[in-house]
Image (cartoon, rainbow, N blue to C red; front, side):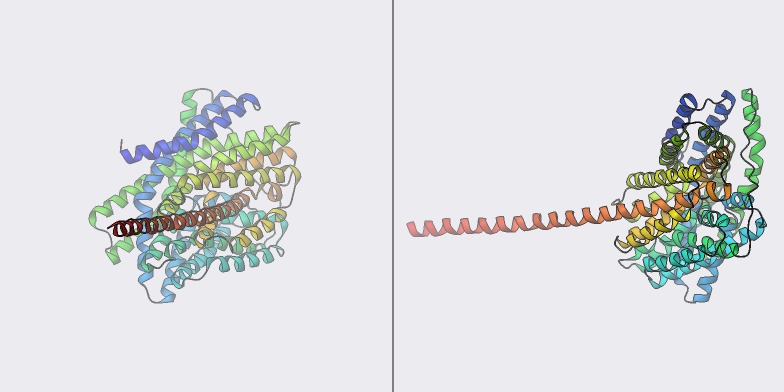
Length: 518
């Protein structure tokens, strides 16, 4: 086996093992599960591990160099209309190909799927282009985010309550495994050409602004559409009796994901082919490496999506429904928090972000610290989501204060952490959230008789919110420790000077004494 692939798969095992263990314990202690369903879950976990390994290696080989290359070329362009057109086109193309967006579009009644998808794509395209111009013109990210989120909050009061959660969810689903590696690498490429002291800080923020676009676009769309009760078709628990049934279930369900991922990757591959044709940026050997990377990415995403949708989603819905049906339904909150803490580690795009942060900061902010901080943030968000399901608490009561706190913190944390934090919000709400946490929330909502549109939906939005606060708090701690280290360094630098001066005085006195004796 390729050594690099082996490393990625081992990392995936460490990420998926905790959530698998938690589900097994729940099935033993609280919610007895048929053996066939549990075997489906375990096979899904195996596919998840292998898929994550291939995807991470493939994204590293293909998406990262392509994104960086396009970012560098955009930086060299002098015409703003051309830069805007390229940014808009890339944002729209990648968004249309994002698998998570297709899932969300299926759940929103009253709006044709294509209408919703194109609306979101236009929102991402416009704001990705704006984010590129922000990096090139060195405009402060915090200021832009404050203005945009004030606009979002204002517009949210003009939209139907039934539509609000879906609108904020759309901002999370658009920044999934397809878009994040490419967009973040583009930011690195854009900033690398500048070479000034703020270049590293400005390489973050593309995902943040790209997440704002779809929320605003869907909120505006919501002024013209009023969805009724959702026609959600829950994840179906497969009826399997033998190991052959399990294999058949996965084999029969895999072709749709093969087609879905192929449709997702073809536009990006065409972009790569056209980019290489006109720029000749990559040597032949690297072109082959990128092509292999696309193949790894394709295989990884197919296995990953099949694993989480066929093996994880049905059990998530079952657990939510069964726990919420019991007298001890409030256990759903701590259980959800525990699942949220570990499930974020299994998001493939999270690892891409964490490695980029570690590389850009030269190890000052480690991937391990980012993982821990993201885990606590997502744990809090899932706890809030389960509380909403059980109480019917309106999402505005959490979203609006949450964003106000995040925006206030952005004025006091190091510039780089603002971009990292708002990027992390979009990255955290990936396939694992939409295929396990959302079914868990929907299953619980159905058991309690709540409104799916207002109570169950919104978990993606909250998962995207809390890391904004958690990462910025980490930034304040990082700044405090950095200042402490600098003070210690200054003191240590002063001590040798004083010692040296004292030695000179002693030597002078000895010489003077000798001279006096003579």
